[in-house]
Length: 355
Image 1 (tube, rainbow, N blue to C red):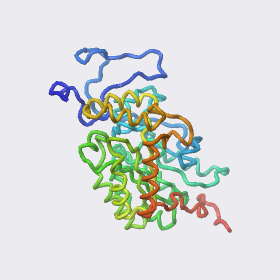
Image 2: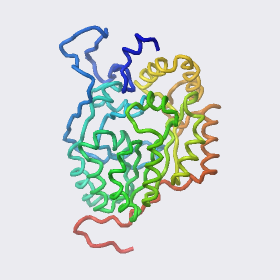
Image 3: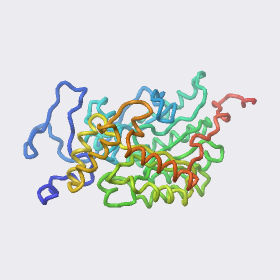
Image 4: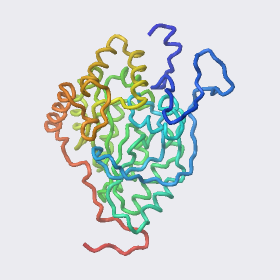
């Protein structure tokens, strides 16, 4: 980037602009960077929007995501990962998938009460719930609101099994609680690691912890008895797919016993956001990376077909898949992710179950 471009680049953010929200017919847009409008936000600070949600547990209809139910205490994510598929969901709230996704975080303050009400329902037959299925449940907002901790406390009280995924070392604040749940086989955790290249990590995931810290999370929680795994997602050809073996080996060495991966897909507004980011940060190889992504999706950068969309198709995505299968076996990361115990579930006031 030139000096002029660097001055305009929003450091600490993944997206550099707000693409049009496809659900809004009318939208105010700042056409020129030097323009001054009375509705323009005064600064780039993150805003927490407290919401009184109507529900917290969602049934997952997608047959290829490996979960049946999920709960998300936060919508939007300050981590700012440029590739995040959850960006598009922010449009449903009336915001953009770009900067709004990183700066306007919706906080479901009544999430613990909603979960308790859900688990008390007589028709609930306990199966694992994913925390979260969308944005990171340990993003910076958690330090203030502690909703994830409260949700875990409810799950521990009911003996409700939970599968977690995060890339934030803040999860270690709840190590004692997770250890208690692990003794009852109620929790497993996936830690997302995409690169050991700090320059790439800072650009691609600007407000996340380092890969070194994520390995520390795997080791500390594994040593505490928590069932740990590693998520390699997404793998991006020309940027980080060559690190797959190193990541899987390091995760295994630190105590991970299962793994998962996704191949990059750029659906909806993410296509525009990622393209802008790629050409600003890696102008020397942007064309190559873009064409490799297209090669991994049959000539497109996105595929919405179940079973194909997160794995891709073609020689590039096939190579990534073959590497994953190979190293999964070599490093012993092919254990079952959802090996959790639902038989202990018990509502307060109920008598113990007989089996």
